[in-house]
Image (tube, rainbow, N blue to C red; front, side, top):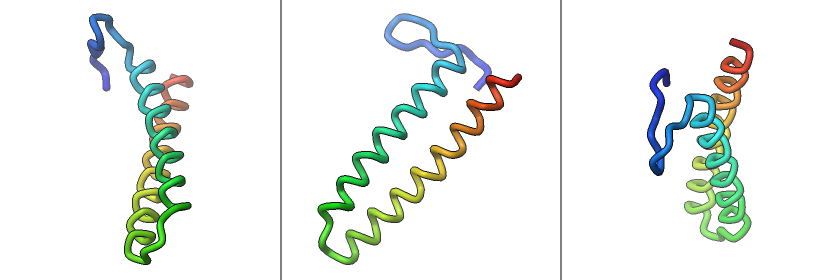
Length: 72
C-alpha cells in the first residue's frame, strides 16, 4: 500500500485508504450481525458466523496496520 490511490478525482493517501477500509469492515460486520439475528436455518447460521469471524480477523489486521502506520 505504498502508492497513492485515485478516488473520485482526488488522491487518497495510504492512511486515508486504510481508514476507509476499517470503516467499511465495521459497517459490514454490523450488517452481518443483523443477518445473524434473523437467521433461522442452521446451515445459514453457520455460514453467517463464518463470515463474521472472517470479518473480525480482517478488522483486527486492518487496525494493526493502521496502528503501525501511525507509529511509523
